[in-house]
Length: 126
Image 1 (cartoon, rainbow, N blue to C red):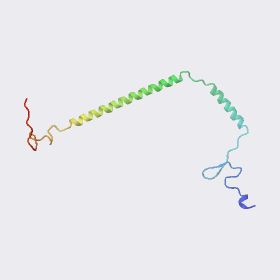
Image 2: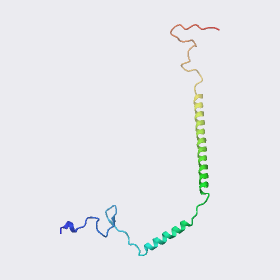
Image 3: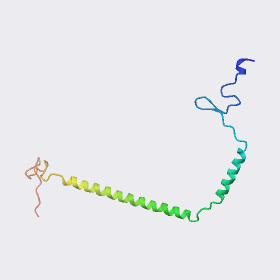
Image 4: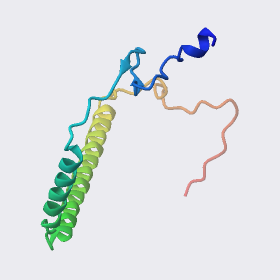
């Protein structure tokens, strides 16, 4: 028999169940002798407890009404928020336009005569 045949590979021994991330051996704790009976009794007790719980007959109607109230309130808040933002934007725009200087700008600073390179068309009086 060779040495590598007699030496088990890492993590393949019969008494180990798994290894943690660092590679150290980790085995499960031994189970108590009456563990299966305890699990069965606990499952039976929970099943009996769950069987005794009856749903509220108006649960769906109550939950739906609550959801609809929240939805209406969310839409109302969103509508008010949009109206406030729109009003603020309008007021700020009007304030900025009102800050324009009252005196005529460079474009309108002429003497009022038309500045054409050629003769202008005659005006019709009427």
